[in-house]
Length: 303
Image (cartoon, rainbow, N blue to C red; front, side, top):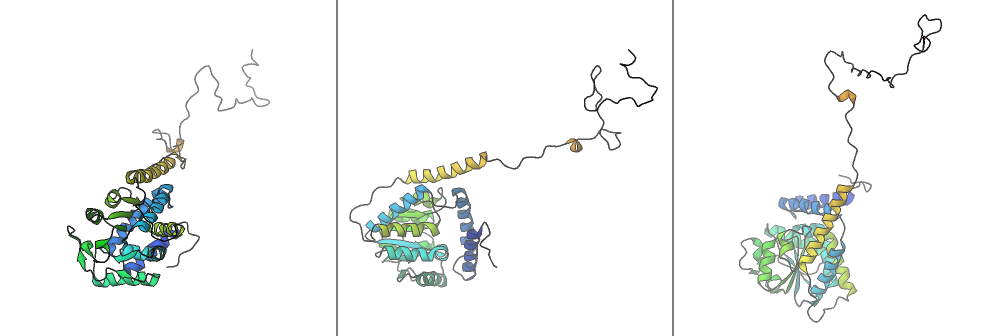
C-alpha cells in the first residue's frame, strides 16, 4: 500500500502500517494493535503533539535517569516497532542506561525479535532475552526479568506497560517513570513520574534533555515531581480541547421548508394559500389593474 504524504493523516497511517508489518513479522501481537488504537484516540484529544506539561515531565525524567545508579528502560513489542531508534538515542545519551526486553505475551522467538529490532536501531547491549530472575507477586510473564537489569534497578522507565508491574516495581523500592497517552491508565496512576505523551515523541525528547545536561551521571537525588499535578495538567489539556471543539461552529442544520411539511388532504399536490384577513390587503400578491377598454371600473373610480 502506497501512502501519499499529502494525506492529512499521513503520520498516523505510517504508524499503523508499521505496526501492521510488525504484527505480520511476529514482533507485535494483535492485543498490541488494540492498545495502539486506544492510545491514538487519546492522542487525538491531546492534539497529537507534546504538551507543555509532558515536556516538563520529560525533562524531569532525564534528570531522574541521569541521577540513578542503575537505570533501566523496559521495551515491549510496540515500543520496538514504534520507537526502537528512540530507545537507541536514549541509550546513547545516557551511557549507564540498561535496555531490557520485557513482554506480557512472551515467547522465546518474540523476545529475540524485539532484541534484534533494538540492535538494528543501534542498541549495543540488550538484556531480557533469556530471563534469569522473577519478580514476586506477578502472575504474568512480565515477572520474568534479568537479575542484572530490572531486578536490581533503582529507576525503571516503563513505556506502554501495565499497572501491575509498575506497582510491583514500586513495592521493590524502584522509582517508576511511565510513558502512556492515557492519563487515567493504571500505569499513569501508579507511576512516580507519569509522562502523558506518545512514545515516539517522548523518548527522543528525554534523550535531547539528557544531552543538554551533559549525559554524565548527576550526583544527589533529583528534584521531586508532583505526579497528580502532571496527570491533572494532561486532563486539563484534553478538557480545553473538548470545550473548544464544542464551541466551534459546525455545519448549519437545514431548516424544514414548506415542501417538507405535511400537505393538507385534497390539495392535489399543491399547498393551499392562507386567505388574507378582511380589511387588509394581501401584500404577497400585487393588486391587479383594470385592462384598457374594460367595462369594469375600479372602486376608486366609482366614488
